[in-house]
Length: 214
Image (cartoon, rainbow, N blue to C red):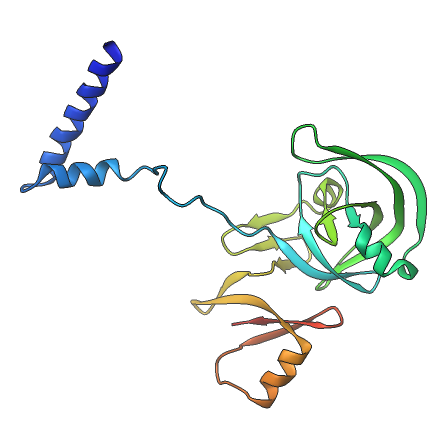
């Protein structure tokens, strides 16, 4: 009964506040006040992860920034696809992920693999494991580079440069620009049929991907 009385008092208080905010219809203002908070019917917020396009020992890779993992990871599919690019050694390791209790044991390591994202270079030993992305930058990369992240613009600031994540939104002279991937065939087709002001900046990433800023 005490909780019900308290709830009624809260509603009365909201109605008084609503009437003060509206000269004509207190209920309309009350609905506005109560709807400021998310409800179960509101869409669940989701945002894309911070991923980058780069190369590992010259082979094209999609890179995920993941500070919830205790090591840097290269997926098994990348090793299978480009095994000739890597020096691989056997070593038993335990990989820990951010999910509670999520651990796995792996037995292969890539020795002195060099990752390139734009002008940024990072050489390390990499754990080979089963993961969705080609490369996962775990805590060792974060500790060494100590990145500053702008999640709204999807940029990662390092000492030597700023990495632009896939889907990056940044600004030039007050205008908003969005970074998107463009395949070489699409790029050539666009050059044959240019559209003024559609693309402002081009950046060649790796061997077969062109990044464009719209």
